Length: 448
Image (tube, rainbow, N blue to C red):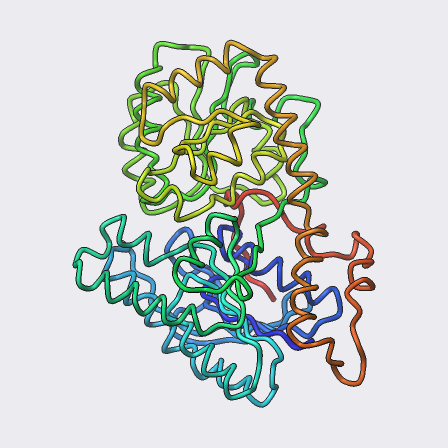
């Protein structure tokens, strides 16, 4: 099957959409499909184009069996509403030649990843010209989130953006997203039941697993053996609402047996560090090699997942998968009825968003009850093993792709879904790369 994936973010980014897009492309290529990608140079979450890549010049390379065409884009040093729009528009325009160059290849499926929805018109046009099946995969409802976060301040502009989003989504053959609630939101925007599809993010529980010893990071961060670690690991952006975690650390500064560890990068990191500068119970970590991801997740006695209340149901934090797989207790901030609430409620602790007192109360409770921490950690681990395995997720994806093309042969052969699922796990890309949360503890390296 010929599959073209068109999206802003890709490997060697290992946060958010870039991580999951790359792993999906590599898994499909390992199963015998011809997969090509049009994307940007790596820049996220640092908001800086990685060393060895150019923001103004395209390049082509092959990564783990996937042909990758990188198009230029402009990356603002301090992203804001207008600058973000210009950033996305620069890629949408600059990537057109690379996208059009695949017309002669005649893909059978053209999948575009949101963010950014600005790529959707070109993806639809190529699908029409090549008679390919069009697929929109939504990691974030970026228009809704931008409006809720105040990045779209004009009500008229917001209504126009939502109307355009609705019009575009209704024209894709398949519209998928990563959680049930997000699929339902797509349906409310006009996507039919037939065209909607659930494609959750995944985690490899053989790569992320509970250690039977203390994490090496305890020694490196000078954290005593019996001190309990409250860990946030992931992107440090506006929608995470990390200020509530800083305020909670300040409120609990008198508890010498608790340390808050922040690991990641993003637009709000400097502000967060400034707020915590005088707090002896806070540690900040630099980016770490990806091979130490499991070591980091095992540093936690308690994982925390703060979310702003106004965006809590617009995104499903993919970092939750690694938290569960590590078998550590999880505290999430969400309202009843939100999918994050449903995912964590029976296998963790849920408190209201942006509520410092309730978060501190939950941390106190778990720190003082090791049996409850162990029970919740085991429940999360079981959920990750049963519901979020790569084999299960990619098997459903491949079934859906096969149904779109009607089992049509590629180059005179027919790829059977069942045969593809039987690929040796040791040869699968998700057995070689991190499957956990998009905590970006990695060094971006030039790919030769």
